[in-house]
Length: 189
Ligand code: SF4
Ligand code: SF4
Image 1 (tube, rainbow, N blue to C red):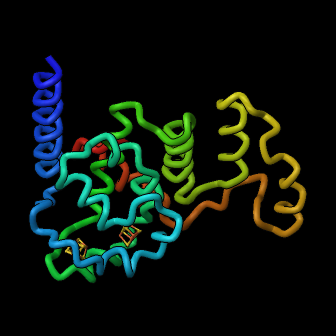
Image 2 (image 1 turned 45 degrees about the vertical axis):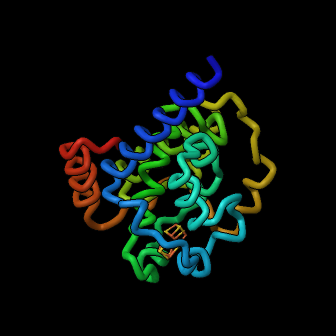
């Protein structure tokens, strides 16, 4: 029985890894673990697994460890790792794919992460850039914590960091068109 469970778990992990490779276009076997990506990653210091280690987890079929990792949410998609990689492993795309899979599996590091992402993107689509104050208020109200960080608001306001009304950009229509294109290609925004 135990042996059956183990082989079925291994088969599940193998399928998952194949699915991630197809979705991201990244071939995990291309990575030979040199670590150049991690050495250049600007947020590696805050990650629980370095970018190189995330690939190693997947190469070993350790699906849950990769999906539970904070690393995939901390990735800033800056492309530094990709430009440094001698094997052209597109790590930012892999991180993005893993984020999607973690979301589907309900393995979010913070329960309101989806809400924050959704409100952030709505604000960018509507105003051409994020309206911090509006985002903060909506997020607090909708996440049921109306006074979260409220003590910081006066200082941010008087320092000119937040404004009651959004700053619209010149060609807000261009940003809306980007959102429409992403949706037309099946993207979730
Ligand atoms: S730089 Fe490329 S080959 Fe080297 S560990 Fe990172 S992903 Fe793998
Ligand atoms: S794209 Fe992500 S993993 Fe790669 S260097 Fe930037 S932050 Fe690090």
